[in-house]
Image 1: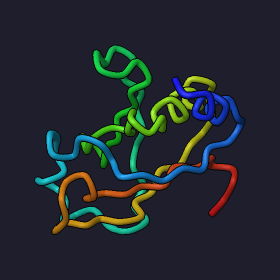
Image 2: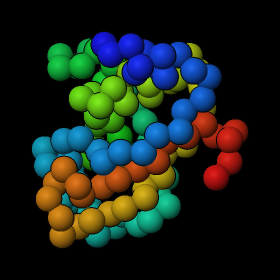
Image 3: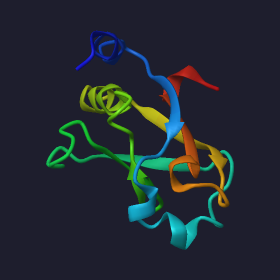
Image 4: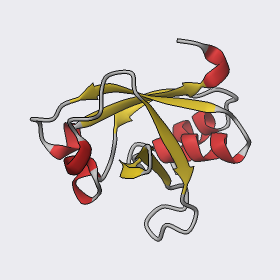
Length: 116
């Protein structure tokens, strides 16, 4: 793991935005028109994920959208926060239904007690 990512992952707050990884392989296509700006999404740890031990699923209600991206180190930051009991809020920033899948759904994750 890159030292900068590791340092950020140990902080007591989270304030990060990114495009959700893997939306092409999950249920985004089926529900993309239901998702609106500022909708709250659900984070769920997936520690048995064979590709990323820090994997965090992102869901809309009970529908799987994708994952917090591992390549950028975001999954480490979010997973460590969740594992330590930090209460996070995840909201939709962009829903680009007509763009490529890797730029389809952008979210913002932050500590619940930090406001907007």
